[in-house]
Amino acid sequence: MSELPKPLLTADQIAKRVRELGAEITKAYQGRSVVLVCVLKGSYVFAADLARAIDLPLRIEFLGVRSYGSGTKSSGVVQITHDLTHPIEGEDVLIVEDIVDTGLTLEHLLNLLGTRLPRSIKVCALLHKPSRAIRSVPIDFLGFTIEDAFVVGYGLDWDERYRNLPYIGTIAPEGDES
Ligand code: PRP
Image (cartoon, rainbow, N blue to C red; front, side):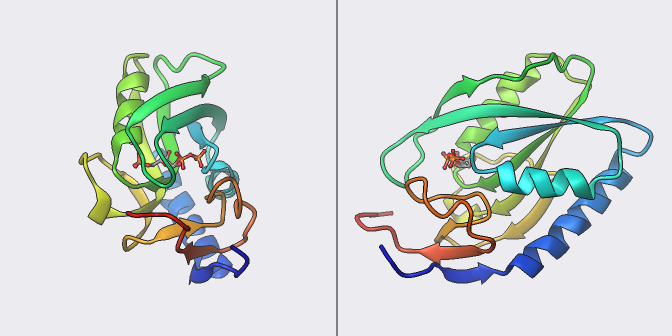
């Protein structure tokens, strides 16, 4: 595939929405501190920008996750490849996801982190594709609702490519039957 992804959200649109999300989160957690849990790999760009848009004391943790599936399809079977480095018991935890598609990954992570007894656990997702939902999961802070297209850029990949694209665009992956 050689052509550039077709723009869906420009870098400016994303930056504006991330600033708004940061302000919403700052307001929601006034007087408290937050542990941001960045779900790797796709969320690394979003989490870096979001963290700088939040005016609160915060800690950042990274959760390495591998979702087994073929090609562009999620299976819902999630393997933790890198765990948090500190306990979250009694903490206000905010899971940062680049995209919620079927909802299977997020459901799994909410169950997993919930067992570690955080004070609260909420979700901030940049993108949501409700047309693909298999599980209904709460998204407390949401950037954009999008149609069912394969999106890349701003951290999101196709076969590990395009993560460094500064905008979010759509592609039609070869061999994708979804
Ligand atoms: C993406 C995204 C979510 C998950 C969402 O990760 O970062 O973790 O898929 O899909 P779901 O709602 O259907 O479960 P991906 O598996 O592409 O891995 P990556 O973040 O390392 O690119």
